[in-house]
Length: 283
Image (cartoon, rainbow, N blue to C red; front, top):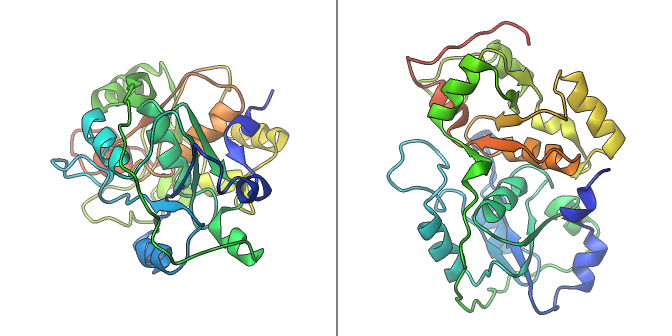
């Protein structure tokens, strides 16, 4: 049975609950450099009333040389608590197109103990196009304590991935576009080899959504299975820097797979090292 309804809210629901106590809204937008969009500037110009901005470049491990590395539980709790977000809130996350970077925020919050996190169907672009309320007013924030409850079982480390690739104990789902997976297209970041991990399956994140929403459960299941993945077996998701791997995590969990990990270092780590096995063979 699909569990999508447990992870999303409709625009109608959110509009009806903008002023409901305990409902917290996060603008989790982020864009690739080639998209030429500044998420903070767009947030400042217009956002859903009451939303706070989540900066993907700041909610990271400061000592890491990799992009978007997950911060420590303590640092995450401090940053999120300063933004007035509590673990017991009903937290609604959105991004511009709908299912690009919001799932990463959804995954991070749940990994650190948030109880009820949902993604806005359709994203902010559709929200605006429908004429729903937006504002440029600064959202007042009352800092609070985010009671962190880490779930490390949702995270795969580099060492974990080396073992997974060697043993095949867990399926690997790669969210990057097919051209990058096969090595036909170059990586957008310098210093990275092209290709994919041996045994990985190509499952581009953008193929799992339509109009900013996850595909209906039957279509989603068919898409995942056509990539060679078994929904009954453990999976680890990966992408370029750990962002869109969360889209796959969301899709798999929405179809009932509870044994999913996300490789936080993703290709930024794997592809930049000289000691990792890489292939360009179709999988």
